[in-house]
Length: 288
Image 1 (cartoon, rainbow, N blue to C red):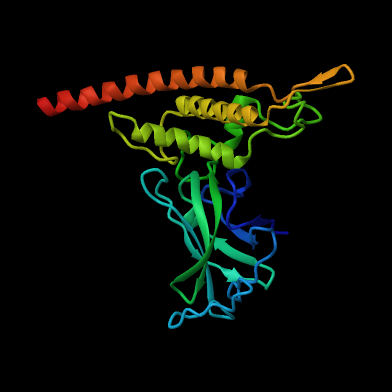
Image 2 (image 1 turned 30 degrees about the horizontal axis):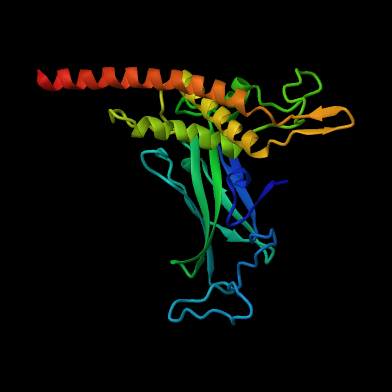
């Protein structure tokens, strides 16, 4: 049975669904597209906003019946890597189900890619979008070996953010779940790439597919997650006391902030030392 992913058009970061595909693998992707309230969208009908009548964009075609196209596209460029996925999909029924056939030719490079599902009237007129994240995971069967690419399990083990198992150590006793979503981990990983690419001196731009410094990428990602966690605990802190029992399980912002800032400072120091040395080599090379 193919697993489907339910996605809304205005997903918050923690709600954006991540789709995992093995590098050089293939997968049928099935999505259930909903509105902001979680109701399935009939993609074969124009969106109406009562009490207004049905929209009329003539001479542009209406998004009705067979005159509707759905596409899946990933972003490409300096921060995103060489993967460019652009697929036409199939409308499965009026309950918002669509499917895409992702072939091996589109999954040659590992990495995390921001993607968008689009509903079009005809071939060219965009009507609505739904965000997703596509994670192409490295593996030993891929012909292009990319041992430097981080995976979500790498990050979870580094920060001990795993679900409690029957045979393992209870890492998240208070949560009984993981603390960070896949989308939040991907955001942290990509933020470190952005930081590298946008911090002077501007040398050697990388993407999530080819950042070569795996140890430091992981350190920076962990630091970013801890700072994000500190912001969450500050926002949700509520000390409670009743019947002689005090509960303050959300009072962790200071600890997360301290460790996060210290770890990020280590990353920043390494990054600036390395980039400065590379920049000096460029200068000496240009002067010879």
